Image: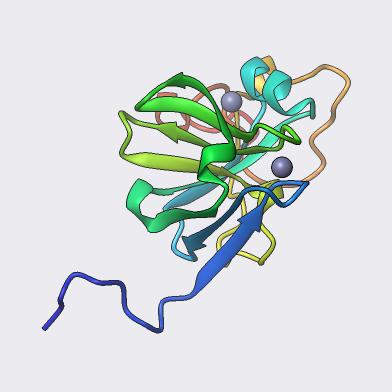
Length: 148
Ligand SMILES: [Zn+2]
Ligand SMILES: [Zn+2]
C-alpha cells in the first residue's frame, strides 16, 4: 500500500544557482520540456531562448536557500531567482500547480529533453534554429507546427 510518500527508487535530479546559495531537487519525471522563444523568456534569461521543463509543483523541493529567493510576481505565478547571484531557477505557473524548471540550472541530466520550440513567432531575428524539433508559432495547443 502506498503511504503517499515518493518511492525510494524515484530518481531525483539536483539543481542550483550560480553562487550555490539556492539548491533544489526535482523528480526526474518531467511532464514536458521545450525551448521558449517568447520575448519575456528572452529578457528573463538574456539568452536566445529558454529551455524549460514542466512538472507538478510538489515534485520539486528547494533544499537550501529558500530565504534567499527573489520572487518576481504573484504567489501562484512567479519567477524565482537567487537573490545573491540572480540565477533564474524556476517559474511557478498554471495557478501554482506546476513549476517550469530553467533547465540550465540542472546539475544532473534529465531523462526528458526539450521536444519542441514554442513562440517561434517572436523568436530573436538574429538566432537561427538548427535542429529538427517541431516549431510552433505560439503555444503547442494553438496550432500545428509551422515547420512540417
Ligand atoms: Zn545564487
Ligand atoms: Zn516564454
